[in-house]
Amino acid sequence: MEIYGFCYGNSVLAASEFIHLRSYECNMVNRNEATIVQLMQSADWIRSDSNQTELRMPKNSGSSLCVLSWLSRSSPVLPVQTERFLAAAQLGQATLTLGLPTDWAVKCDGAIHEQLHRCLVFVSGPIPPSLSAVASSRISKQWDRQQYWFECLRTAMIRMRDNGETLLTAEGTTTHRYAVRAADLFGIPVVRISCVTPSRRQTSRTWLKSLVRLAEEIFNNSSIQVLVSPPLDGVVHSGLPLADQLVATLADRYVALDVRKGGHVHAVIQRRMHADPANGKTFVVLPDSLEAKVKPASVHHDLLAQGAVGWHLRRDPATVTPIVVADKWPSQIETPPVLSVKDVQDEPWEFLGHWTRANPQAWPDQTEQERIDELLLSQDRNGRSVLATLIRILRRELLQASSRTIRSESGVVCFTEVPPWEWPGRRTFRPHLSRWDFEPYGIAIRKQRVKQLGGRPVIYGDEAKWQTLEPEDHFRFQKLVDDTDGIDWTSEREWRIPHDVDLRLLADDAAVVIVPNQEVARQLTSISRWPMLVLDE
Figure (cartoon, rainbow, N blue to C red):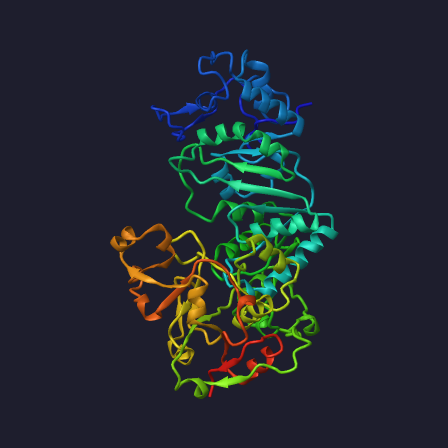
């Protein structure tokens, strides 16, 4: 019994006939009509000097033409790498088809067939039953504002696991990276789709060559790989993304976490509902606000009217943990003083300030995957607000260096000569960095101590200035004016230390904590041994 093959939809191709395809981007000199045989020859699957008469596909009594087994039977000598690939494919029950395999083809409409009949599809193993997918329109990079989204994703994945379902996901879709990680954490099997967009470097020929080159990685992967080649004729489809279409079409159960009206996810859900409006297995997560879900003009109302099932995750307020500031210094007899701007404004300001920011993504010492795990497992107790960042600094007594916005590879900790009472008036949002500058939270260290720790003033200049700097001064360089929006960075009067700053080395009078008001000051006195400077009069 053949367990892998080459078929076109549900139809049987004439065994004595070559499959002709037009102009299929394989870097051949002649881009006229060519056969699959020629494509395989150009990709080094079969010898270029093979007799094409011998390579004509024989008749098959089944419903498809089994090219992989045909290769092993019909070609007298195959390249070693092809023989190894065929052996691994047979062992793993892999298939290679023109268009989708028969079992999946019956689920698809004409639009998908129109795209895929020009593509090769490799499936690395048997497709399990009960495929479930989670989809979403694009979400903000401010992950701390997406807690409901992550809670819904976590709940959907846990239900998937409990129901014995398999995750169906596609690279390039919004949910892919998060869903794959959740599947790994919760022990859910995965079917992963990868659709390749044609380019000068990625053609049907290079795609076929990569199958052989990456065979070991493909067959040893714990997930089932569904790899879709670029169109053999090189013509790019301009409609909905193929990845989104395939997930919505092939999933038995489909959960949309967030749907933007008129977006790709909205469109593929509508097509899914049109194909089978009564299947009861298309779910749309309703907004966190109960009032928002019933608005007649909303996209959710529209999809529910077409047959989708609404899903609202009930959240228990008691489970939402507020920021808790525990006592860090139980032996501390006196709390640090709380100062006002009036107490220090008339004196020379001998400190350099470091303002903190909200940090919705990974901390400097945290990988992106660790941050995603926190969100998926609901382990982010204190959030990532600007206050939470300051609390983390005070608890750990550490300022961590970062190289995100500087040219030097070494990380730095940044300070400013601008006195804190001017920060509120300078507070501004930097769209290109998605962050605020001059936040009214932070810590200031005596300038002399900053110098002792290796801190130096920034050197502002242009490319010519950079070229004159010694390597040890590269960390100090800052472009004078931003090319994007013309920001004059000299106004920040910046200093930098080229490494982490261990705050444990600072005396109790060597620093001051900057806070916006008395309420925050009262929260932080239990975890700070340095005075508080309150900016709000």
